Image 1 (cartoon, protein in one colour):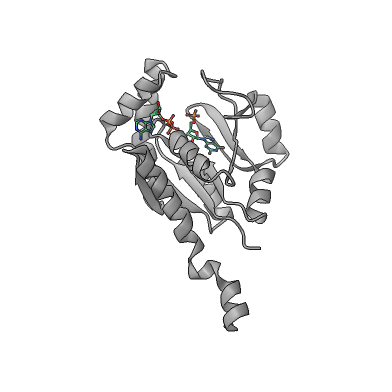
Image 2 (cartoon, rainbow, N blue to C red):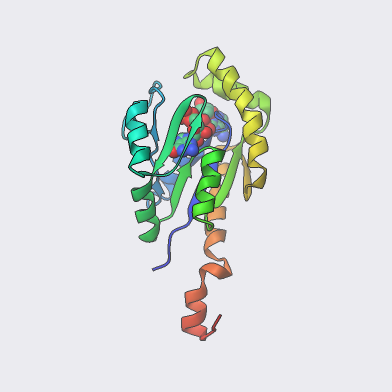
Length: 203
Ligand code: ADP
Ligand code: 5GP
């Protein structure tokens, strides 16, 4: 059975990563959307085990010691990490996997899993980013300013990504994520078995 595609979705806070991934999951519910662990406090609408696994810093550090993460990073003073086992199992079971993680973590995964596809989600403009962060109403004004400052650094760090999705109209942004996953599956390097077994082509 061929392995699933590993899609890593990053972008500034408020770009709409979560919203685009939710829309994608409605369309392709067989996809495994990884649930991260974090030491940040829950925001309104967050649910333990659904949006994140909420941990104390001590609990998180114990998971690091136990080698429980595919990657982890510190972002805006909090730990965030991808639990290793469930994501690896899903890929090996042939399911596509989405990790919605920031850039440092994304590059760590790319080192371990070179087939991973790096997708950067951006809002149409900085003004729209500010509006979306304010409109979401989940952060205080000083946290919003911190996150907007972080957005520029995040965009610079994302320069080596494979794809950019400008999230203007939600439907179109989700279409683009589907197109990326589908294009990945028809790469020659992912169809070696077919070429060998059906056409008897050797490397
Ligand atoms: P992120 O996960 O990147 O931090 P969210 O998915 O929480 O961002 O989106 C931030 C805010 O922007 C939310 O209030 C969301 O409803 C809104 N939003 C996301 N995508 C769109 C879009 N395409 N058009 C309008 N609003 C959007
Ligand atoms: P938020 O606090 O807005 O939920 O997330 C802040 C940032 O952490 C976002 O860029 C989000 O993509 C990223 N993030 C969420 N989970 C993980 C993870 O498991 N690992 C890493 N490296 N970043 C993550």
